[in-house]
Amino acid sequence: RKEVEQDPGPFNVPEGATVAFNCTYSNSASQSFFWYRQDCRKEPKLLMSVYSSGNEDGRFTAQLNRASQYISLLIRDSKLSDSATYLCVVNKGWGKLQFGAGTQVVVTP
Amino acid sequence: NAGVTQTPKFQVLKTGQSMTLQCAQDMNHEYMSWYRQDPGMGLRLIHYSVGAGITDQGEVPNGYNVSRSTTEDFPLRLLSAAPSQTSVYFCASSEQGGETQYFGPGTRLLVL
Image 1 (spheres, rainbow over the protein chains, first blue to last red):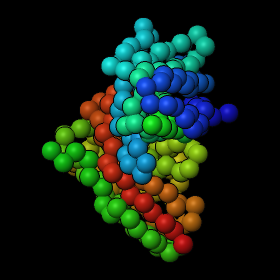
Image 2 (image 1 turned 45 degrees about the vertical axis):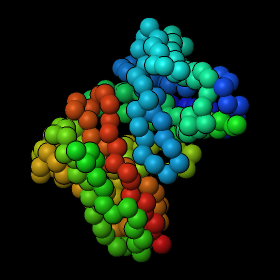
Image 3 (image 1 turned 120 degrees about the vertical axis):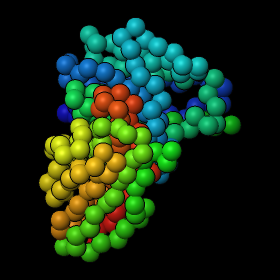
């Protein structure tokens, strides 16, 4: 079993709609959590950190459920520019990051 | 600030050749790391460094060497390239290692 699992998608989303997807992790000792965004053939970039209380950054909302060991990302009012692969990232400690394989989101006009 | 830079952008090697992938950062970050990204597998940590003179192995270190003689540079050496090392390689840096990692643009390597 992979340490960090994501639905690869693609999630095809009409412009303006809401899309949400999850990521599960296996190591209950994981310390911190992130969502990174990766555009095609580009480097990953931090989208947002995920806090226990849940957090929002504009149209993006991230949630953490430690009991069930999953994190989620919700994108509201999707824009064409949101088309990308979203990487779930778990920090196992000492900067050792474990990446999921990514969830592809395609926003269509 | 240039951020994290990597050279070369693309490289084709023959099996058994050696080469060094260069990585440099100008943000005075202590923590640097190398990842490889293969289709369907996500990024996997190869080696990392928590400061000049200190390196350690990640998840997939076999076939790769690193050194960290300065804060700025963290080269990755392929000792004897194999087709299984065909991948996209990303270098990253961060202040402490646990938070935001800044990635370089990547090196696409093909081993024939």
